Length: 369
Image (cartoon, rainbow, N blue to C red; front, side, top):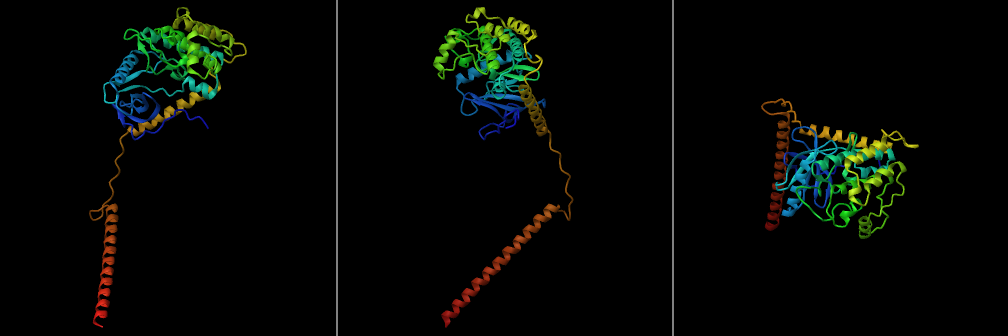
């Protein structure tokens, strides 16, 4: 099946036509806590991704509080490598959050559909992600669910998305283990407080996945056993290209204090990006399969934007139809249809009356005879 880029599912009858001032065009994603829609922006400025909490059913107070916290955190996140928040209303009957729409595949989809990337490309992605984390942590925000599915790759670089379980370090503290098991840090797996170093560890797992096609843990098929491996930092780096190993190992240090800061990680990644890559491709290029899928998404995104803008234009009023004796051609056609139908009813009525008269005459003749 050829790649078509953005997967936009039609709206269901249970979906709203709009959320706030955003007109919904279709579904982008769905999960247990709600849905993400593609929407036309009210200012005519293109498209938006609008997330809503519990598209079906009534949101509980705890769900609303969680969503409001997500909105608060997302509004604090800025930078070229995150999706910008456009608007939000966490107190609406159906809470919603609108961000700029980025027509780009996730790193998870790229690996699943086009295979792992070469080491040079992974190192470049590491530098971009480190820049994004640096801005995130500077704003006092931890992502806590960093993984390939939550990192988009556009022609402009990476974009971090989905801050559903992120939190601001000055708003809340928690010891609850959250995130996807294979991508959380050992201290999170042990139920210890999350720190910004946990995001760096998750990035290390992500880089390993991009380079090898799998997280750095033995296949267990059992989430409990996987959690035990994660809690001990029992990683398997077999298959990670040699030039990329220093970057991945630095992220996956068992002791959070020994992991580099995002700025330090960016410097390390840049050092290895600019180093000679034995038998490697040009470091300025993505693998051909990855580049083609990124291009497919960009093209499809532009098509959707053109369609949304066209749908928002007011319809042109048709030229008035000419009138004959006060009626338009359509009116004369309707009048003719009415006269024809009336004539048919009269004929049927007279025919029925004739049949009745005939039956009565025959009956009278029989009686008198």
